[in-house]
Amino acid sequence: MEKYLSYSQEVLDAKEKGYPIVALESTIISHGMPYPQNVQTAREVEDIVRANGAVPATIAIIDGKIKIGLTDEELEMFGNAKDVAKASRRDLGYLIASKKLGATTVAATMIAAELAGIELFVTGGIGGVHRGAEETMDISADLEELAQTNVAVVCAGAKSILDLGLTLEYLETKGVPVIGYETDTLPAFYTRESEFNVNFRVDSPLEVAEMMRAKWDLGLQGGAVVANPIPKEEAMEASFINGIIEKALKEAEELGVKGKDVTPFLLGKVKDLTEGKSLTANIALVKHNAKIGTQIAVALEKTKK
Image 1 (cartoon, rainbow, N blue to C red):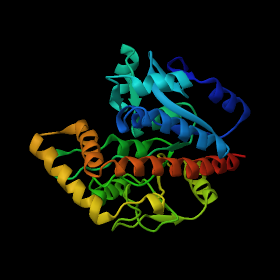
Image 2: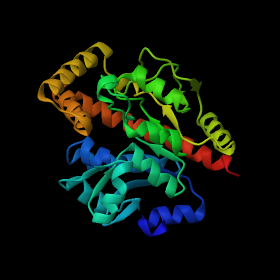
Image 3: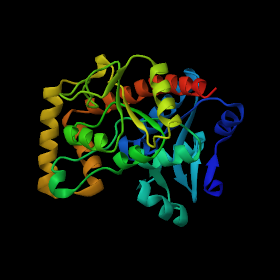
Image 4: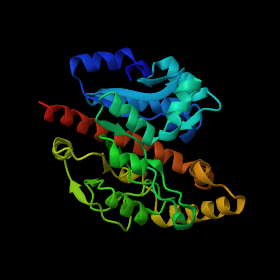
């Protein structure tokens, strides 16, 4: 297995010294934001992780290896590259064997993090059950991964382009805890609240860490969703963003956009219709997740002792 992993020097040093490490995905760089905001945001998020006492490990597939931690040059190359494949669980073997560039989704980043011994991963929002899934069966592989891979995922909830109720039902069936960080309701990415409750509310990084350590010590496989709402000043009005999402969904249906093309299409549409406000919100929530996530990673490291 180790022959497929390649660590940055910073991550190698952290592993040797027992420093906390925070996994970061690369899909947000290649598919989530335009250049140069993508590279700039990735660097700023890494700096937030460092400033809060941990080491960042941005994960991507380059030259037949799963890279755990990218150099500055690799980040720049990745942010500029065209035709980067979006890598989930099913794609990893092919992309490694064919030596193609792959940007890791939530599912693939979780797999890579667990292989590298990293217990915490920070992202924007998780995938979930898509609207109309009772006909299309369009359910993100992120949910299956959360059920079987021992990594806690700090996010701003699930994107409101999804069916949030069915997403929560699916997670419940799979035994995945949905933890609200300083919130009783599930945040919906651009907004701080939704009509759905989380399973448990916690108000400190240590509470999350102790809960995860107990879960894993008991041999209960799988991760958890740590739902951390977007900061108040960056949040969008629910009625405004939901109206735009409805418009975008209708257009996707009319154009016959399906499968893994749906999310990038919808996010692009939402960005255009909000005149870029959704991108600003996206950047703000990822940075906030990095701060809280790093605090949890530091606490997780302490609970090992």
